[in-house]
Structure formats: C-alpha cells, structure tokens
Image (cartoon, rainbow, N blue to C red):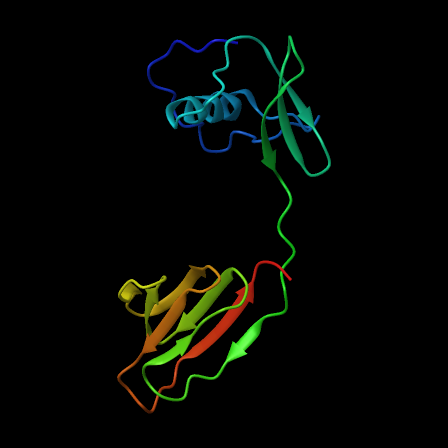
Amino acid sequence: MTFTSPQQPFPRLGTEFVDENRRLGKPWYRLLITLWQRTGANLPITGSVILNNTVSGIQALDASTGALLGYVNLTAAVGGSPVALAPAVTGFTYTPTAPGTLVVTGAQVEIKRGASAFFVVTPNGGPVPMLIGDTARLTWYNVAQIPTATYFPSTT
C-alpha cells in the first residue's frame, strides 16, 4: 500500500480505532504509517503490509518477506501500589525509585532531571510523569492548606 498524499488528515471524531475483527481502522492505519514515515522510520514501507493482531498488540509485517516492521503494544504496563506522600513543609522533594506519575493538588511542582536546574511543570498541581532519578519539588504558600501528593508507579 502506497500513500502519495502530502497531507494525511487526522481521522474524524468517532472513527473506530479497531474494528469488530480487532483490525486497525484504515484511517488510523494511514495516519500511523504517515507518522512513522515522517519521524525517520528506518524501514520504508514499499510494498504490502500485513497487520497481525495479537493478544497484547498489533504487529506490522512485510507481506513479501514476513519481516517484522513494527509493533504497537496495546496492553498497559503493570502498576505498583500508589504511594501516598506526606509533604509537611514547602519545598518538599520526592525522588521515585520506579517510573510513574506524581499527582499533586494545591502546590507548584518543579522537576529536576540529572544535574539540571529545577523547571516548573505546573503552577497548581496535576499529574506529572516522572522517571527513575527525577526529583520533584513541591512549593505552596498557604501553610494552612497543605497539598496532597500521591505517586503511581507504572511498573512493579
């Protein structure tokens, strides 16, 4: 399958991503191929592609050789138990031991990765993705309203 259109539109709202036979919908297939080609795919798709649905994802196989061209994982990573943090003083820091998401309400959140400086990622809290070794710093200005913070590890 070859796409010659210079612009691949985003699939319309309501377009099924996967049909009743668990096959990727054509508009989404075209969009994924376009994204793949425009982001430096090292294996150009020049012939027919077979999409093979598995329990955990979708494989793209070259129809003539059977070579695996790519894989889209459709299963979520196993998450660990949430970790409730207890920020007591402003400037509270947290460094996770597993990748995941820090959810904060009522505080500014800054992230530091490696030897870099802290960068503000949200002024009032919210979900913040983190990697192992990142450091989050929570700052708030009303001592009567201590923020809440919970870390959700994405793997156990």
